[in-house]
Amino acid sequence: MRVRVYNTLTRQKEDFKTVAEGRVGMYVCGPTVYKPSHVGHMVGPVIFDTIKRFLSFLGYQVTLVVNITDVDDKLIVESAKRGFSVTQLAETITADYLTNLRLLRVDGIDHFPRATAHIREIIDMIQGLIAKGFAYPSGGDVYFDVTRDEDYGKLCNRDPEQLEAGARIEVSGLKRNPGDFALWKRAKPGEPQWESPWGPGRPGWHIECSAMSMKLLGPSFDIHGGGLDLQFPHHENELAQSESFSQLPFARFWLHNGLMKTGDKKMSKSEGNEIVVTELLKKHHPETLRYLLLSSHYRSPIEYSEDRLLELRRSLESFYRFFDRFKRITGLDYYSLPVTAKQSEPVQGGEGLMGKIAPLRQSFLEFMADDFNTGGALGILHEMLPILNRFADQAGLESAGPAARAREEFHQGVLCLRELFSLMGLFLEPISTPAAASDQTLDGVVRLLIDLRADARKNKNFALADQIRKRLTELNITLEDRQGETTWRQG
RNA sequence: GGCCCCUUCGCCAAGUGGUAAGGCCGCGGAUUGCAAAUCCGCUAUCCCCGGUUCGAAUCCGGGAGGGGCCUCCA
Image (cartoon, rainbow, N blue to C red; front, side):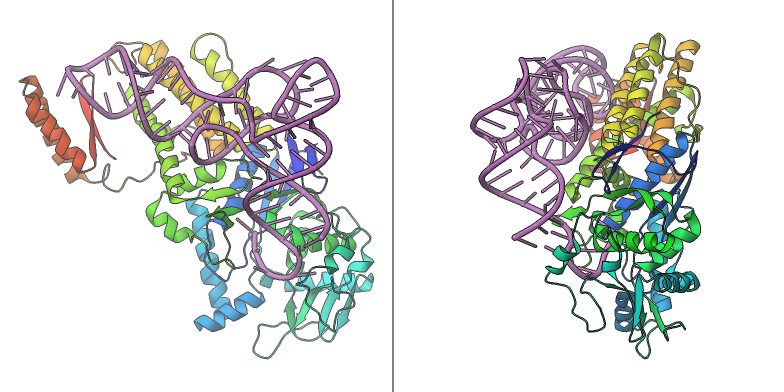
């Protein structure tokens, strides 16, 4: 399958070709761990996890790396403020980040390299850059000389001269050019520090990504991802120092995800308008958040709002109900159905249900192959749902008759749904409904009321039957009468 | 000031030259004792103006509005 990818470097969609046949190396910029993750931090991981799922499905062997930057000015300031050591702070915040990723079913990250665990590699790279004339030590710091890099600015389409016009460039007597950036920073007393040829200090902001991606993925790899806001200076600098060091092309495709917004403004720690993931997850299921992040194209900004999450939850509910229905029909648990890791035989269309499902499956894959259009792909899944429900309605699958043939067909259709949703990392496991399934007492009580209501209905005492149902509705318990039995659910 | 992006139904959102996916909300119908669930049906000519083209939401030019980056940021 031909995969098309929008490449920031060329500002156009290109055919996806890998450096090494059949393998994909992917590096995504993770957080600087000084404050708990906000919703925006989850965008990249979810998107790139989904991209990995898709590429793996196509048969690629994908290695996904997300770095943890655990030494930085921000950590020093924040840890002092909170009375922690930098290490303690980094560990606490890293744990928060990893927990959030796990809840969002970001399962595909193979390595989480930490900057502080790669000081050796960082120093080696800086030495190499100095030796090659791209960097210079100055007063205990080491700077990268942007004028020595021929194509500095190519990722962001900027001239170094233009950059100098920026008002925020820090004037430092230690730099040769205003645009030069620190590879190594001299430590002030009490700051985290490591020995180096230039005296005690710590890495600058961008170098850790160069050193760690090179170590884990080699000098040339396939996909480099991150938030749009990292394009400059972080990625530009990373690119410059990596290619200057290796004299080889760095990442082949640069993918930048759009930024999360709240109230029309970018969500960020510096704006102070961030929604902390942990707080959000107290009110919303992580699956709803993952669904939000996948419901639009990854390059678009995503507008976060409470109402939107509620709306999307309603959208997911129809699938949750469908899985219950699937169980009633087949006796099988949707969540136990196999998840295909790789693309299997082409799904046969033919007549009947699969004749409708197979072309939609194809459309889904085409959406994904076209710059990972998850929004379009999810739309397809929403088209499958009524087809499956209609089939179940028309074939009378919930009534007693044998209909083994139709049941099997239905099963096949749902397997396909399972396959595609698993590529999105959705519906991998049952959502935990706080009381419903787990609380035996509640279930017993509601079933008692259902039985009483059934008697009332049998006696045509609809007033009583309706009152029971109404009172339960007020308690957020919904009854559904269907052939032969009444079921209940919360919500 | 420089670079870049966006503007599609009430809201969200696909669509990148061939005549507008999908979701939420709303309305009507089937089903139901009544509901719920499910199914069916209904609601847009794509910010404005001009151009290219047999044909444009899609390409070009201009305008309006919104956003991102210009060394803190996923």
